[in-house]
Length: 89
Image 1 (cartoon, rainbow, N blue to C red):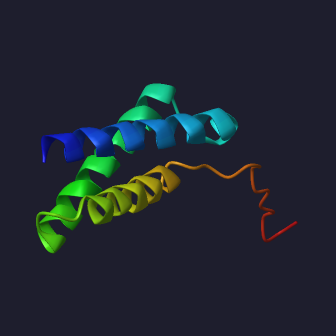
Image 2: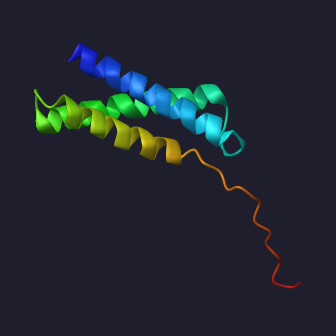
């Protein structure tokens, strides 16, 4: 279980680094992105390990990948600012 948790943390870190490298203009500070990726991966690993039980390391890593991706997607900002016109214009 320790290796599974370590593997999911590394997976979340790599995913967060790739997201920040690719979308740095749409994400907040790098430390926040990296920590969110790792925390999401660990949470995903914990939830899927609890649901599936021992012996399914691939399932736990897949759950870590999904939850980490979902938590990183919550940090994205719009690419351009939306211009809103007032009702009187």
